[in-house]
Structure formats: C-alpha cells, structure tokens
Amino acid sequence: MPADSHEAAGVPMWRPVRGGNAFEITVARLAQAIKLGLVAPGERLPPERELAEKLRVSRVTLRQAIGALREAGYLESRRGRSGGTFVVHPGPAADRPDAATLAREMGETLPDALDFRRVLEPGAAALAASRTLSAAERSRLVSYLTASRERDPAVRRTGDSRLHLAIAVAGGSPSLAQAIADVQLRLDQLLAAIPVLRRNLDHSDDQHTRIVSAILSGDPVAARTAMEEHCDATAELLRGLLG
Amino acid sequence: MPADSHEAAGVPMWRPVRGGNAFEITVARLAQAIKLGLVAPGERLPPERELAEKLRVSRVTLRQAIGALREAGYLESRRGRSGGTFVVHPGPAADRPDAATLAREMGETLPDALDFRRVLEPGAAALAASRTLSAAERSRLVSYLTASRERDPAVRRTGDSRLHLAIAVAGGSPSLAQAIADVQLRLDQLLAAIPVLRRNLDHSDDQHTRIVSAILSGDPVAARTAMEEHCDATAELLRGLLG
DNA sequence: GGAAAGTGGATCCGGATCAGACCTTTACGG
DNA sequence: CCGTAAAGGTCTGATCCGGATCCACTTTCC
Image (cartoon, rainbow over all chains, first blue to last red):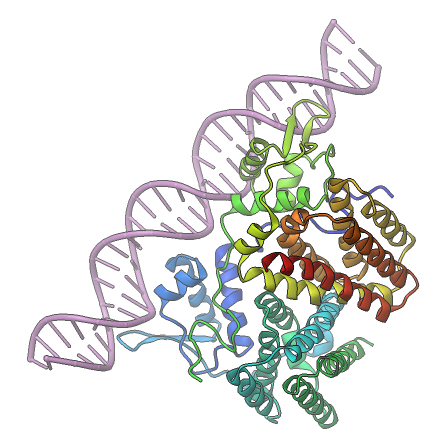
C-alpha cells in the first residue's frame, strides 16, 4: 500500500489554501445569498462599508464583486441617502441548460454532493427535533413550509431553500447550518432545472410536511427518516436524468 | 419577526470571506496534517516547490509557515539532495493545559463541534458500511484499528485520528471526509487532554471494534448506531469536564 | 432654502503575496 | 573525483488587496 504522497489515509490534505482570490470568493458569496433566496428580490444589501467589514474584504474588492453581479443583471445600485444596492427581480430565465447536461458537467462532484447532503440534512432534522425550539424558530418553519408549497417555480425554489436552511439552523449547530448551505448551493442549479411533474411536487410537499411536523412534535427518528426519504427522492430524480 | 439584517433564516451569510491571511492558513493546514498524524513523525513533507503548488500558495509564504512550525519545534529541515522538511518526533509535551480549561476556552464552539461531529461521523460510518470497499480500504481500517488499541497515548491518538479519517474516507464522499477532518482538528487538543482511565480506553476500543466490524460486514444500521454511541461517550466525557 | 446625513463612486499608498530566477548544500553515479 | 540532480535558501520586481481619504448624489430635517 504505497500511500500516494499527496494524500494520507485518503484525505486530500494538501488541497488549496484558498479557493480563488478575494474578488472571486466575494462574488460567489453574494451570488449564494441571492440564489438561495437569503436576500429576496427587491431587498437591499447592507451598505458597502458595513458589508465589506463583515466579509473582511476591502471596500474596493467588494465593489468589484458588486460590479460584476450588476453587469450580470443580479444587482442594481442607487446613490444618495436611502440609496443602496438592491437584488433585481429575475427575468423568466429562459436560457437555462437542461438538468441532464448540468448533471454531467458536475462529474464526480455530483455523487459527492448528494452523499454529503444525505448525511447532513437527515442529521440536522434529527437534531432539530431533539431540541426545544423557540417560538420564532417554530413559526419560521411553518411559514417557509407554506411558501415551499407554492406552485410558481421561482417562489417555490426559494421557499424550499429557505425551509431546508431553517431546519439546518434549528439544529442549533452553526457549522452544520453552514455546511448545508454550501452543499445546497452546489445542487441548487440542478434542483432548479429538474423538470417539474405534478406528481413529484405533491410527493415533495408531503415529505416536507412530514418532516416539519416530526420536528415540531419532537420526534427525531421520524424527522430523520422523513428527511432521508426526501433526500433519496430528489437524488433518485437527478440520477435518473443521467440514465 | 424583524430578521436581523446580518443573517437570513439564521444563516450567517456575511461571514468573513477568508479565515485569515495566507500565512496563517498555511500554518494551520500544516499543523493539521501533523497533529492529526496524517504525516507521521520522521516522515518528510513534499518538496517545497511541489507543496506550494498544491496549496496554491507562493513558495515564500509556504517557507514562512514552515519556518514558524520549525521554530515551534514541529518541523526540521535538511538541505541537499535527499534533504527536505521532516516532522519531528514530539517530546513528552508536559506543558499541556488541562482539558477543562481548554473546553471552557472554546465556549460555544465546543457544543457546535460536538453536534456537528455527532451528525458527520455516524453518517460516514453508515455510508461506508453501505458501500463495497476495496481491499486496500478494508486493510487500512483493520491496521488503524490495531494502532488505535495501542496504550502509548501519542501512538493511540494518532491511530484514533487515522481510524476515524479512514472511516470518513471509506464513506466515499470527499466533502464529507474533509468536513470530518476539520471538525476532528477542532476537537483534537481536547481529546488529547482527556484524562485516560483504563475503563474508558477499554470501552473506546470495544466501540471501535464494533464500528469497524459493522462496516466490514456491510451493516449500515449497526455501524451508525455504534458510532453514535462512540460519539456520545466522548461527548459525555468532555461535557463532564465542564461540570 | 440650506445644512446634515447616508449612500454609492473614485483614487492613492503601503504591505502582503506571488512568480520566477538564481545560489548553496548534499548525495548519488559514473 | 567530479558532475549532475534534488533539495532548501535567497533575492527582486510585479501584482493583489486593505485602509484611508475625498467626491458626487439624494433624501431628510430644521
């Protein structure tokens, strides 16, 4: 067993220290917040000075990132007091490549992301169910559940993202919530491109409902099981596209 | 529910883009590989030029990091052909603060890390048990299991780290393995500082054995359960230290 | 109407970092 | 014994990036 000197015990220990330069990472971070619906269309980003400080990035770099997303049509800036940078309401986005192509392009990272998600999300659901949630957390779960039943695809995807993130956060572990947000972003494009069949939607709604009610009634086993089924269902859809 | 504008759905979306400068991160990365035993004492790091390329860091920065760890007594460099940078055999390390102090210093990140680990590791164990492992993977598991039964504390910790990482890797998801390596590092100091009681060691050995045999015999449920018990046991020990 | 405040927009400087070439030391092979 | 190879050690100029400062625009308040 001559260990490959680039790894040890199979762990890629010499992976890159930084995933790109400050500009690229900042763009990715802003895009994440927008695409996952964490900042809804029409809402305003924090002022540049404040946001730059929170991201630990110079204002110059932040402005470059904002500029790039503005040119890409995601953001709009207005000057003056009560100005700011706003998330643009997206157009009908008819230029989306089909899911099968996207899935193929992801290569080995797709099964990786699916496996990772399959570990994280059921774990978070079980954790959430085993904690006593605050009233705010409970009502968030319910309201996002409602949004995720929406039929309009755009609203639905945002609601779905937010619901899953709310469950992750309800688990009480920031690291876990962060990991789920990351893996969700990796799958987001793909999930958004899944052909929507009435049957699938109903199935998904049903699973969401069972997950949330298991969490609210404090049943970790049921929450984990329901979330596992939910993950398996979407994974199945995606794998099916690869034929 | 006036959402705090720094978060959305409780997800800390404007967290810092980079966790420190290149130098600091590089030091941390090298320290991780050393402390988790991924590069054993006496072994050589890859040549600087090669390592710098893999870490996507300039050779200057890498050398600064190596220099810092050399001064801290972790590394040693030799020039000339067949020279290189070597991991030093650690001294008896008598200057370790006690676990209770360390645990208190971690503050809220301790329960976070424990919860996260409690999700990741059982998930990885179950995943590993559900896959058909290569002969190399199987033999790695067995040999690290043996090492983890060692009584010498230093050898034992390294063996334990490697065993857990090997299980993580056997799950087949690089992202998952990476996450486990990260969370393990966060807990490493603490685990190394736990007072060793004969009874605890035997218990831990037994759990490790059950986990590995469940994985090797392809029983995901048993693997998950055994790993959950194992995580709960060490978490209990740590929480106990906080009184 | 005018001043103050709060926002995005633009520019400059210094330190951190990078890429590359070159030097020094050591071991191996003819 | 000497030349070459492989490693760490050193230097330099270009580039990235953060901190600071000032400008331009719009709203709010007196």
